[in-house]
Length: 370
Image 1 (tube, rainbow, N blue to C red):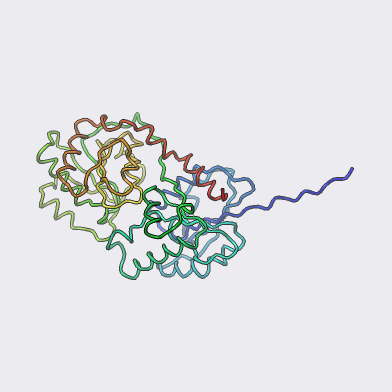
Image 2: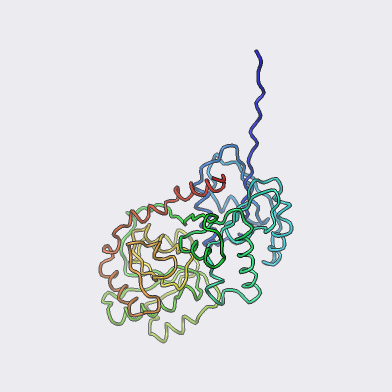
């Protein structure tokens, strides 16, 4: 009897570029990848290779499901973004030699990548639409690298239909080359949820979030409509171009009604979501908008701006307002304060669009080249 030799299937190697993650504070980029990886189903005969800064705690940051074969490759701990960029463009193409594909959760991939495919995430085009996030040199670089990676990457991944439209119009990337994988959420124990006497603002404190507009709208609500003396709690680390919010709050006489919690843990944030009346996020620009999705997962409505991606996140729930019309914002806060349940119609259907398992399946198919 003749036995035929069978070729062993070559193991696929999938690189994940985590060099942009060096901090213990989880940002939007980190949360995005965390949700995808922690709901990921193994790919047959595949090995993941994580490229990390030496001090990065991979296993402490991500809970990678059992059954996924992976290893880490330690890279230097970078003292500056410039050092990381030089390493990424000049050294990474050699470090990644032998991979089938290299994925980056942000605009940080080698432009030249001989022998392997690259998939680059461009979450949004903030540097093109919002001034002041970076200095002149860094802003110029981010714009240039976004254009170059948009052209050179095998695929471009983004987090909303609005961002895909921006990529097509601004960077001239072909629609067929862009995949939309949304941010997702974890299911909550709604027995812990109740409508308390405060609203939340969640986000890094920077001009595009329009916190000043939310404060002004809340002050009008407090003066004209609020009988229960609601409070506004602001959660988020200081970002770039911070306004003097303390001076604005003093000017409006809101010192006892508005407070700042800074950056807090996920558990603390969940407790605040569970007890709030609703969320206020009247941003001028968002690539996606995680806080309204998180609020909805806690069965809480949001007041959001009618711009960029936010309408797509809240759908028929919540209330959409002109972010520069503070009276309109105040009335929306009043309406939710009086009857929050009224603005949760369609919640389950809206959340289903952002299920973590669904987004992880889409991500898996992209990595497999389907």
